[in-house]
Length: 324
Image 1: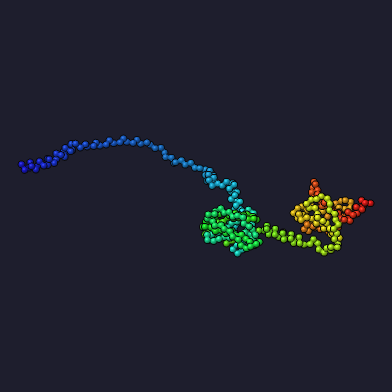
Image 2: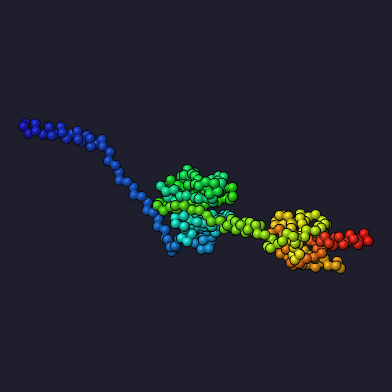
């Protein structure tokens, strides 16, 4: 009886498990996948690479960086026209350029330093224009007074690594400059020498000296003869008077002769033939190293202007002949 009591609990524990086993579905094994058919591969080939001809690739790259002929011409002209500072052109710390129409003058500036652009003495400033007015400080001032008064353009950059251009116009000329800013190196001042103005000044001084020089020295007033008759056409160069000192003949012209075309002088002989005579030009005077009774000044090709000069004795003799 005791053994039956011990088996009963075991049977009670096994029965639920058996019932659970009868209701649980057991999965069937999966059907194996059909085998993948093997395809026999042919001989392997390397990938095809289409190479671009070398000249075509080079041409394409060159076309990307190509510059049009007009722009290239501008760049070449700008480089050729640019004057750089030169050691032999410094006077102390001032770079002195030789001024030329259309040239571009290079300047260098630095932050914290002012570069002085000195114009010609007596030159009046009209305007200053800069390409970059935000990062460059541009000002002007003057020094001296009267004929020695000079205008100074002052340039200062805000930082290094900048560039700009300046156009300065005055009552005499136009200046074109390019400026670049460096970290520390700056030009203290730059100015110009003016060869053409110097040549004009020399010519002007020579003209003043020549005008102040007497036409001839040692002339005696009592030996002067002014009895010359001037007749004929009336061009702008028609002489004012003619006179002689008994040895030389002097023909005085208007002041406009210096800027116009001067007529050649012909001496007229007794037979009426004209021959070119030697003479010197002293200011507005013709100086002939001889006396003559009649002479002619002729100028022109198709229609000549002819001015005749006759001595008073010849005029008087002609009148006497007509009267007799």
